[in-house]
Image 1 (cartoon, rainbow, N blue to C red):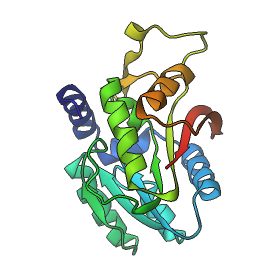
Image 2 (image 1 turned 120 degrees about the vertical axis):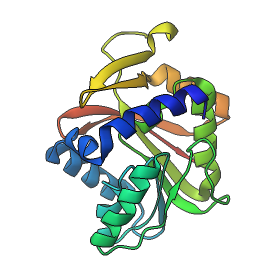
Image 3 (image 1 turned 60 degrees about the vertical axis):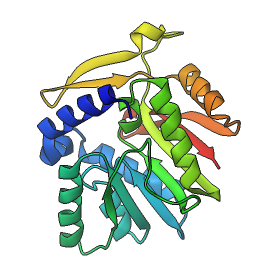
Length: 215
C-alpha cells in the first residue's frame, strides 16, 4: 500500500476508534449486510474478512456458524476484535496486515469479503490492482471475492481528477476513491481478470456498488 494511503487510513481510524466506527452504521444497515453475506457465502468453507475492523461482521458471522479469519491494517482494531471475539465465545484468527500484501498462502480461502468501503480507501490504481490480485491469489480455484463500496454520484462519467473525495465521517476527515463501473473495469483489465460481476445492491436503504470475481 502506498505511503499516502497508509497515512490517511491510520489517521482516520485511530481518530475514529471502534465506537465511532460502530456509530456510522445503523442497525438496519448492519442487518442488511449480514443478510446479504449469508446469501452469498458458502455454508462450508473458510472466509477471509479483509479490512475486518473490530470484527463487526466477522464475529456475528462466526457466531452464525461460518469459519472466519480477519485481517486489518489497524493494530488497535485487531486488539479490539480479539477481545470482542473472546467475549462472544468464538475463535477467530485475527491478524494485522495490509490487503495489498496478504500474509496468507495461495488458495487458502473459499471466499474473501471486503466490506464497508475499505477498498475505496486505496487512492491509486496501483494499490487497487495489487489488492485485487492479492485477494484472488488467496482464494481457492472454486472461491470468489466480494467487495463492497459506495455507489458513485448520478452522472454519466467521473473525471479522473474528481475521483478522490474528502468528507467528514463521525467528525473526522475521510478520504476515498470514487469508483464506478468504468474504473472497476479498468482495474479488472489491469489484473487480467475477465470473469467478474459489477452490480448495485440495496443495503438497508442505501445503494451500494458490489464487485464479485472468481479465481
